[in-house]
Image 1 (cartoon, rainbow, N blue to C red):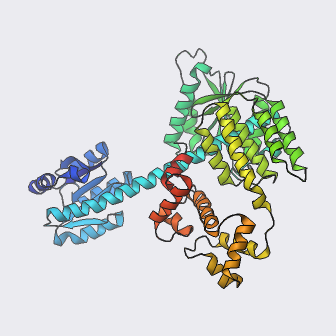
Image 2: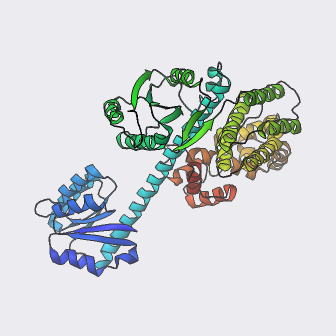
Length: 508
């Protein structure tokens, strides 16, 4: 339900508007009426309404001045202007502050309801966009945390091979060109650890929204690192000096190191923690105990190296050996991390080319499952399914089929794309023959292949930070200006709506 405030210095106007309209039927809660701009300003900063219906000319603080002041605090509050004919020039000035709706006095109930409905639509669109942006941020945080955790776990197993480990993640995180800071908090007991991490997260979220912190804990020492943020350090120093926790016998001490890139930081961090038997990685304030599973990673690498060097790929034997290696793992977090590493290693070795989208879908589905046996079974089933279609993907097509596939991939945004058009206007050949050869070569009907490619492209676009609205994705994958149709085919192929997919990817 949206929240509304009415502001007018004329008592009869504000009371009439508040009483003649059934606000609940519009799914709106009327939270207050104000007699002037000053009273309205105080109520707005206390209540933060979604909509403010305000007169233009009022004593003390005019409607225009009220809008200007509130815009500095909250750009999402929607304003409706009430103005007389002679005040319309003031209303036009309000437009520069993003005000899109006004009512010319005198106005009737129907006119007010119509404008309020339009503004309500704007409010819900703003909320939807904020939700998408929030999900994008959460997804980015989850991906970064998973990658950092995997790098540390792998590095503990292969202490002299950080460069190789980092290489497989370089498409996801910048390891060479971004400055980083590493903080050490000494004498922090494990009893105070969760409270400390929560306090740091809250502080950073307030001072530097969007900054992603990473935590590693070893005996009595918390290591915190993040991208450099020059404006933060003085405040953070004061914050650390004031850190106190009940039962903490010794005061916490801290010091900072600066690094020109993430790779250098990881080198230093790994040297510091290598001597510890137990290392705790933090994910959503949960401690993940990390052991040195050197033999496990050696076995997996040996399997990959062995099968990469063979000309004939034995699917059954490969799956059997992978299953045997992973079946030894009894910790869910470790199993998920090893599977993530395995997928990326397989892709980087070109043994089986998984796309980033395949990997993301894979991992999200596994995160919804509990129990090592169940996780492993889902992984093997999905992996086996992907292997089944792999010979089709890796085979060499006839020249005109290759051209068809290439043309499809380059013109997914064309809503009129069809095999008939490609045959007659691009390949200059019979469409019936092309259709039969397409099925023979790829194993798919053209319509299925085209839709699958569009859905795959849509998944990528939905997770990009610059995507603002679903209809922009619909246009880019060939659904024209029909987001409803796009949502229908997306749900048919994925089992969920585009919005639900974004939330699922964000771990909600």
